[in-house]
Amino acid sequence: MQKTLQQLTRRLKALRVRTASLALDQQGFTLTEMLIVIALIALVGTFVTTNVISRYNRAKVDATKTQIRQLGVILDDFRRECGFYPSTEQGMDALVQKPTAGRECKNYDPEGYIKGKKVPKDAWSNDFIYTSDGNKYEIKSLGSDGKEGGEGIEKDLSSNELEG
Image (cartoon, rainbow, N blue to C red; front, side, top):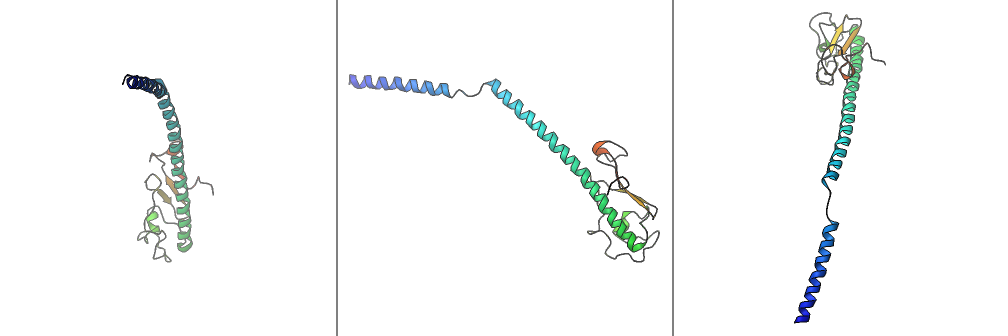
């Protein structure tokens, strides 16, 4: 019995040593290490977010330029069939339904010139500004701020300033 008690005591001591050694191996991170990791994650997140937002804003500008060009093609089609561009008063609504005021288009397409019967808006959900004397036209977007002038994504976009 004494021998068994001694053997149990020895096994218990060996078990305590193993447990203490395991506890030392699994201490975890210090507060400083955690703060450094959090700071690095925040830094990377800021960089990625700034980059993504910049590309998103650039895509909106490019999409609006594409819409202006497409509306120009539709207006050219209107002029080819009618002999003139819709006047400022008729506006781009003349591309959706036959105008009742101003010059009359004898060859107006009964289906209109825009599929979906709705004049598109720019990438910021603002109406395009259309002006025309019947011989030439200008389509304009006021940019992200919806106001005249501006820089960067707030800059006005005009069909007269777009290249090809």
